Length: 263
Length: 196
Image 1 (cartoon, each protein chain N blue to C red):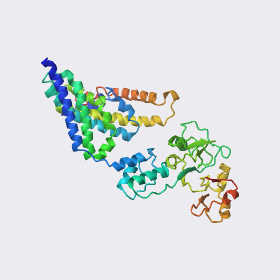
Image 2 (cartoon, rainbow over the protein chains, first blue to last red):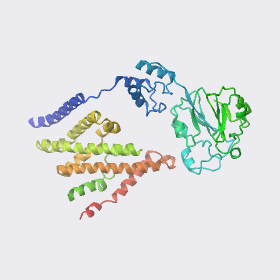
Image 3 (tube, each protein chain N blue to C red):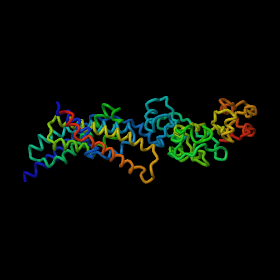
Image 4 (cartoon, each protein chain N blue to C red):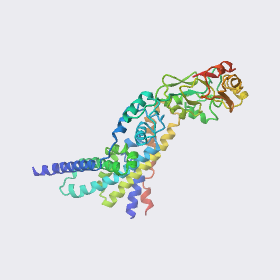
């Protein structure tokens, strides 16, 4: 009988001792977790996309609480609704989220441009980019393997006819695809922007024209047509000055290659 | 001194815990995707191995042997290691929050890591002294680190290659792991020769 009690007593004793030590330790060394941080974290959508500029939702929540200068409307996926919730938790004035969305600045569908190589390696834009300058005739062209599709948390970007397209209704403007694209042709723009140039080619007009029917050839016709001087050709492709643009669409009408599109 | 060096080197290279004893395979396959995570996990394992040995060895020698209860070692060691890891986590959270954040997710994983339990049990089976046990645990941890770092490099190479569909993912990783283990067998007998 006594032979059985000792082993049981030892195991129970060690277990009890460990339990007591752990309890005391957790009481003595309890770290205060800020209630507000948890509340803000819960209010955030929790996709950890990094659109706010912090490394994930938890980090953003912590920074909102710790640093009063951090704004509550940085979460573009959550939109104004989340900004409202956070502002309520903190008891400060609410500012609407400036909606952002991604656009792909390339019109290089197979009808407009062509491929210069038969690539059969790893089916990803990043890998293809390593071969010379990618498979497209234009070295700024969308490579069309959909690296952006793979990283999108919201299923908002799809490759259609070999060019990535953004679904406006789904895109929240987090910018994950912008960082992923090896061609740097995806840009984040404010949702208020009306027009954009669907091309990123920095080659001169002649070279662009040979590579792609729909590329911006830097002819400057749009520049002359614009009544408010909101469009400027710089570094061989046209770009908008958002503050001046009134959305009259005159540039769109005169563009000989039809590269200016409504957002 | 020579003996300690032999123990250290042989447990790192020849008797590598992951690659020749096949302990701790779960984190070896699970956490070796990224180099940073692999190093973090290995350092946490090394740390826990050393303190687990430091605590379980006296318990075995002065408690279990005393009452002829050697057969209880497995269950007692599991109990001790599990609560020890919890305690370490609490202490780190309070005093070294940065370390806790980087090791954070790995510490609970280590509670059930067979490599940690394995090293404490093998120390006793091999009849090491206290110092030798500690050195053996350090070596086991470093061996784990070596295996993890090597394998995370190999995995990154695999990922950037075009693998036949049926081998994608786990199959190719398991094959790679077996080849790495095979190459480590080449070290057999090297250590004894080094220190003659």
